[in-house]
Every structure is written in C-alpha cells, then in structure tokens.
Image 1 (tube, rainbow, N blue to C red):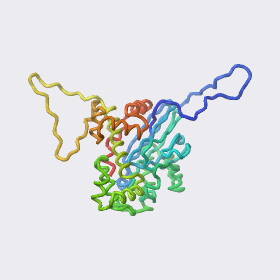
Image 2 (cartoon, rainbow, N blue to C red):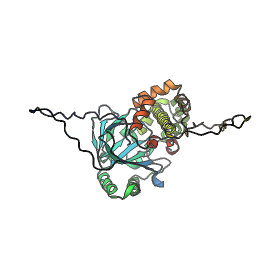
Image 3 (tube, rainbow, N blue to C red):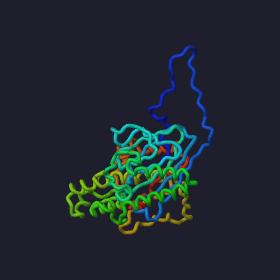
Image 4 (cartoon, helix red, strand yellow):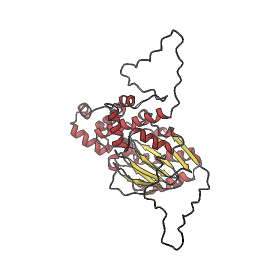
Amino acid sequence: MSAGSGSAPAGKSSGAGSPRTGPATTPAVTPDPRPAVDEHRRRLPAGPLRPYVAWYTGYRQRGLAPAVHRGLPSPFLTLIITLDEPLSMLAHPDPGQRPGEFVTLLGGLHSTPALITHDGAQSGIQVALRPLGSRALLGLPAGELADIDVPAESVLGVACAKARERILAAPGWDGQFAVLDEVLLGLLGLHPADPGLPPGVAPEVGWAWRQLLRSGGALRVSDLAGQTGWSARHLTSRFRAEVGLTPKAAARVIRFSRARGLLAQAATAPPKLTAPPKPGEAPKPSEPSKPGERKRPAAAGRDLGLADLAVECGYFDQAHLAREFRSLAGLPPSRWLAEEFRNVQDPRWLSEATWVEQAW
C-alpha cells in the first residue's frame, strides 16, 4: 500500500523518559543510512489466474516522513505479503478489532476505511482478489472475511509462510511476481473451479455481482432481483453471505471506487493541449457517444471537476458525492487527494480508473 497523509502515526510516545537529575535531553535520532527508495510495480497475474485475481502491486518506499494511509473500500479482497517490515494496522474496518502488526494480511470487502501507519518505510506485495474467486483460491466464500483483517496464514496455513520465504529469495519484482503466480496456481489446484462459475456460487449471485460491476454500481436491488427471479430479500441474504456486502452496499463501494480512481487519474494527468480554431473557423464539436455507451470523462487532462465526476459516476449531485466520500473514506474528496499525494512520489498508483474493465 502506498503512503497517505503526513501526520505522525498515532500511538507513538513523545520519547519522554524517567525523571533524572540535570536538564532533560532529547534522544538523538539516527538517520536511516540507506538511500531513499520509492518503487511501485503493477502487473497482471498469469492468464489462468485472471478470473480470480485482478492484479499484483509491489511497493517499496524508504526515507519518507512517518504517515497514516487509508485503506479504502474497493470491489476486491486484499492479500498483502510484506517484504522488509511488518504492516502496522492502526484501525481495522471493524472497530472492534484491535490494532496490530501483520507479516501477511488477508482482508475482506468493507465499507469503512482501514488505517495503516509506517515510520518512514514500507514494502510488500498487494494482491487484489476477486470476491467470486474466493472459494476457488481460499477455500471459503468472501462473506466469511467481510469487514475483518486476519493473518493470511490463518486461512492458507503453513503454505503462506513458505510462499513468503520464496518471494523474499526471488530476484526483483518480476521474480517475486512469478513466485506468486506459482503459489496461487497451486492454491487453485487445491480448489479446482470453472472460471465462469466457481463451485458453491449461486448463478444468480454471480450474475448480480457482474451486473453491478458493469454498471459501475448504478443498478437498484429491486431491478437485480426482478431479473434473477428471487425476491430482493433472498438476493440480499445470499449475496451478502457470498460476497461480504449487501447488493446495495456493494453498489456504493463500486461507485465510490470508480469515482476515486477517476479523480486520482484526472489529478495526475498532464493538462490537455487543444489547438485553437483557425480564424473564422468554428470550434470543433465534441464527438457524440454511441447509442447505449456510457460516457467516460476526459480524465487525460485536469478538467474533471467534482460536479462532472458526480454525474459521471451516478451520484445525484456534487453534495451527494462529498457525503459518500466522507462516509466511505472518512474525509471529503479534496482532502483525500491532498493527504494521499503528500507522501506518494508516484501518485499514478493511486488511480484505479481502469479497475472496472478488469473486475469481471
């Protein structure tokens, strides 16, 4: 995960010691002798894994200011395998779960942010797992991991620790990603599945999930239920048990994840340069959308305002977008951008604007 705001991690002491004679002294801070590092690598998994895994992201950062990063709701389960230092969780999506450190972490879908801290360095590989692939890869439905973070070994057993040892010994990101491919293909072999419909997943639930993804979270539960032949209540119950969120909550998370990805993409792209019309020539009209095509914003330039983003992503208005950001991220969109970009040297990795093409 990439670094977030520039505030110091909560829970750190001020360094005050026991009473002593003479003037108090401030403990000397030894600078990290290693050079500053900021690496991010994203790669698609091996072909047979893509129905179950969206992507891998490798990250290694050093020489940063201590920070708090928000792990925001998304349409993917999270598997993290740390490299040089453990992952320090300040707060989990479930407020009843205590803070702690993880060498590996597996987290389900959630609708409130997690808080991750670091003291200037963090490194690992994050794997985005598709909820409908959870049974095939993990041997359990994604619903059993909803709102919680657990050590990955508690689900994957001793194979998880052995996989981490192999990843640490592999040369470079490509070598580490290759080990991940082997490990996850091995897990898939333990729970063989048809990519179109993993065993145990009701066809109606799989269809409803994919429809929500394809629509960007723009469908109502009653419309989904009507086309499955189930009641809204039955669909909600079965969907939550399989995915970890109700269809309504999943639609909110999908819509929010798309909005923040497009917002980050628009904020990091270079401004568009448009040649002015020649003397006497009228401005060239914009190209109309094809029938039935969902219009995508011009995120290749810095011209995507919050009002336009709200319309594009299916919110009632900009105020609705802001309320959803506060609810799902814990802060408004502008502040999220400012805090996340503060300690991320390459902010392109904040953007998940292409996730919807890879999510089903």
